[in-house]
Amino acid sequence: MEMERINDNTIRVLLGNEDLAERGITVLDLLGNHKTIENFFYSILDEVDKDHSFATDSAVTFQVMPSQSGLELLISRTMMDEDESEADDEADDQDVNVPDFIRQQLNQLDTDDKDATDEGGFIDANESGKEELVLQMRDFEDFIALAGVLRLEGASSDLYRYNDRYYLVLTFYPNHITPEEAKDQIAVALEYGHKVAISSAVLSEYGKLLMPTSALETGRYYFK
Image 1: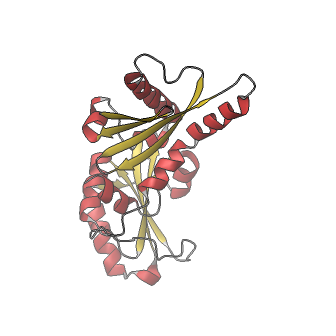
Image 2: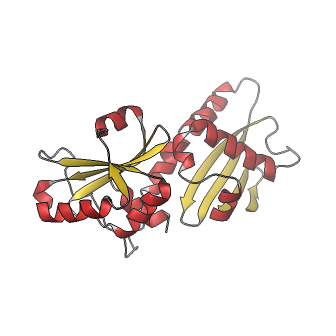
């Protein structure tokens, strides 16, 4: 872990994937549980602010920027007077929105990446006649393994977490793929997960959407 004091009110922390592993957390963990996020960020603040001088009498906010090598975390403080409770409320709102920010960053793929394919990006999500396949993955590693070998064409992929399990929804669009092509892609997918009767509607209602539309592409890009 590397720490840099940018100015009196901002600390920059670089956490590599090994640093995250030592703390028992992954980028994916930060997508789901707000309490996990909050506890993790404040534990990092405790590590870099050992004398507790940075956070004294101030509201602390966090901005996180994921990368292939780990995380860059900016910790900022805003000095407050007693009557400046609105600033505190704003800081709380920023904490709550952290998962959405991370999710947005995970899906802003580098356009120069030669392996990237904009799967699902050219497809109208409301197109009629689409067919879905819901796979339950044994673990997250199986999802990453599948992402490494399956380049979807004429289909989109969404990754959910539900009841402590990972589910991948593959949506095929007949106007963009032949039955034979879909069959071949499904055969590859079934080597890494098994088909279940849970619908995407149930996952959308009760599960946590981790990676929308281009989950395989996102996983391949960030978890090489």
